View 1 (cartoon, one colour):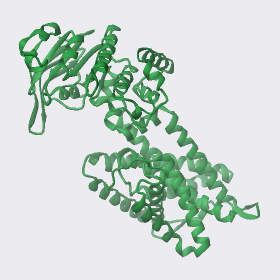
View 2 (cartoon, chains in turn red, purple):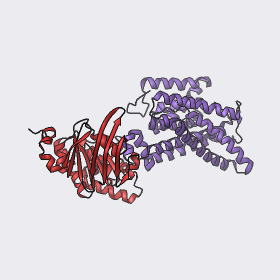
View 3 (cartoon, chains in turn orange, blue):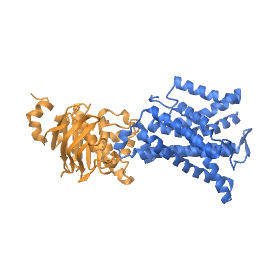
View 4 (spheres, helix red, strand yellow):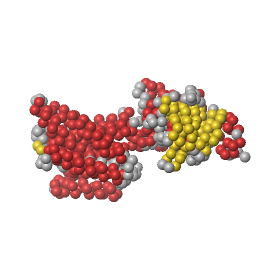
Length: 237
Length: 297
């Protein structure tokens, strides 16, 4: 059984079925990418793992425990932290306050201090702007802040929803480097991306979601060569 | 002149204390809690009962007794606020806003006529009154009661501001007001934090109720109605959802009424308030401090 496992999961929004028999797993220490087009069910999958939607069938287990009925804040306490699509920075609060909110469940001020320093080391840009309101940051800075905010709680599984969305290519590369660095330091990452090329460069394995079902899966390097992926998601010939 | 200002400030202190709860609740769940004024009334009656019980058991100095009664009342009305949210609002939090609003109005009547059922329609006399001494300030005669009201309200507001600005729970409240989903992603238990907001807001209104009883001497089951609307007015003037706005709006409304009354007479008091409400809703619906345009009902 995988560290995080979805086993034959269905999700319905009213009568509309968003996920159909989705099975996938993430192992400790990996970066796993979930690729697919708009509306394929990628965000639904993340919202399922972080407790915002409930499965109508199938099982969701985390370290062997059924977590399909836990609420989002309880999952954060279990170490599953979700960086949402569109960053959702607290716009009128400062960068530092945003980061402190990421550490909401951490009670020890010394630990928070240490992790703040780690995040500022990793992303010096945030330190320069620590007193500035979150809403005044550029898109790239906001994405870094969103990731930094998640890191303060020292998650065991980091869920990222479209971290490259709306960013210039240079910034996409920078954000991907940060994700890879975070993974190097031992954190497990599950990343949802439309930008398949960028995601496949840092991921170990990947799944492709097509209208609510997993259509392909395998090591990232293999998928990057797979003609079906190249044609559909990498803009290849 | 100073007389008028101090009068305005002391009335404004009541408005501000009640407006804070109005505004905090609106800020966090976008609900206009029309039953909030009745929590103030409930505070006065809880204070009335607790004070009655207390004076028959022990003989405390009046000041100490009042402080004790205020604290007990704040805890009890805070609890009532939490219960109110849990029973009446939480089950329909995601229902259309009109349902919430009608529930709030219903709850207001339930509280008013529930209290009438228990204590009767006639005003009750508060067992203790802040003694009617007065001091001379720059030639104006100021009753001690008014000074106490201003001081107590000031202390409560400073404590609240620090709590919301500096503490972990305060940050969580602001986070939910900005983006409830993102707040959940931080590990914040939104339901519990909303309960906390209801507790604090209701405790402040309860404190105002006890003070009102001790200052004015009589309490009745409809006393929360008019102050509820005034507090709503104050919250709108200051910028609803904004903590400092509620304080500023309360004080501004108190002063405005005080000057208006000094100028034209007591019967014009409410005309001033509601004219002010209408003007703000028409020309500056976000209030003095509300910068961003918030969704209106």
